[in-house]
Length: 429
Image (cartoon, rainbow, N blue to C red):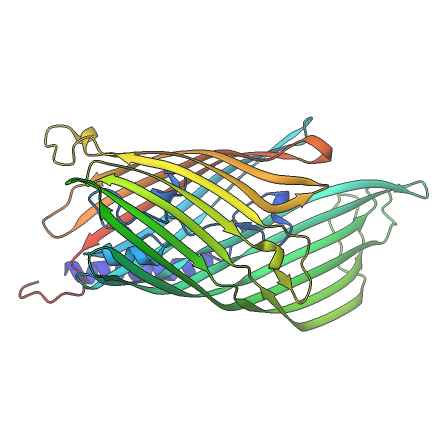
């Protein structure tokens, strides 16, 4: 009966994810270019430590799924299920006025199943990128006030399956194959806010995207002493090609006295199903973790991505190579404590810096964030273990100089982790 309840729970999670991953989960003008804001493959437990992942095998006494380096799957000894939510508050300012927005969605749904003591498979779905923005640029043409309104919506998701295995005593290798899919929509409107007789125009572009992507990784681990271990890690993403189908539409419309939009007057241009392609860049992640088992760990990552080689068709839309640094750690006061719950909690802290692939008016768009979080163990039995993971990012993106905007954001990631002996034969239920 217990296993039946778990299967029903998993089915409901998968069913709920079908629509949740297609929704936009950002409101940022910096999501306009390229593929939008990249989400990253980290779960809440990684994000709370600045996003370190390359050298991370296990986080504390629980089995965790480290998607950012599939070589880590070999450390998984129990069937692991992780589902999580995201919520974010974003404040956008140009130095004079500030606008705040809140977004939330399902963030990830992932599984890992050990094949034997030194290998495991993993599969699931999570966001790849998000797009969501709306802003206007006012001008005056022939004495008429004109607003140019730019908006976008959508995002890409990533469904993956991977395998990691250990070779000998000190080396682990792994790989993921992923299907990246979704839709990105952009509008450019021209309106007169004062003249109801003005014929407004709208140019719409919708891009449906789908294709395979490949990740790979390696980890080398060695004891520095009887209780302290060092893990060196590398993971990369191949420069894969995604298929794209583009639909373009141009229309005219008017607005009534209340500002409501009337039915489109006419269609001036329509082109459906234009075949194109997107060439993703090579991405590299290097890092290390030093840890004392079930007590503490510290680590750092360096990420490099060659976005100058990104192509939409044969064109790079002005993207630059990106670079990121992450540092973080975790401490568990006493994993064997009986009298104090607070000593069982995992306390996490980190920092991350990213020079994104955007450069606007000769200004690199940079992102900084302080991260922290907790791992809260829940009542468990001898074969099943539960934990709630909370990760928080408090950061800033962009700056107000040169007519740009600055974003102050607070992102909260909540995950629920189960470790269990699923998919094993039991003599009794």
